[in-house]
Image 1 (cartoon, helix red, strand yellow):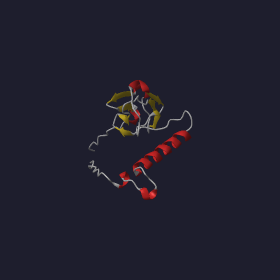
Image 2 (image 1 turned 90 degrees about the vertical axis):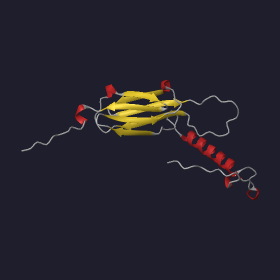
Image 3 (image 1 turned 135 degrees about the horizontal axis):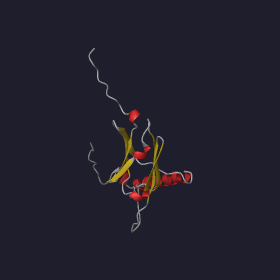
Image 4 (image 1 turned 90 degrees about the horizontal axis):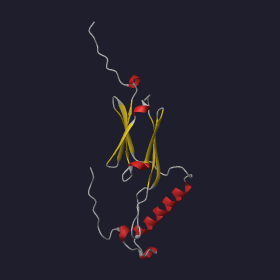
Length: 157
């Protein structure tokens, strides 16, 4: 359940504090600090290594493993899915949009991304399917016959 957020003008983050030498609201100082931290983290990642991993869930049904990854705003052509043995790998790129004016704040992730999952059992990698609907990528990896649960009936003796 999401609780409502109350915004009160003049809160501590919006007040000017001349006693501390801050002529701008405190929120602007924090924004600048976070931007510097993000630049530092991005500059320390190795070249060619993805900068972020999308939020994803993996669930198991009787017949398959289903991976749902949040990829809002990313086009189908910008996503690659690879399956080898038991490892699923989703890679791609979230391109920055063209904007008019000066961007004052951004929390959207852009650049290369990668999600990897090692599946717990043998799968039929040749029958993997994927769909992209409303920003959610759903990858279905069918289980091999040997790993499917088998129902055993109890007989009377």
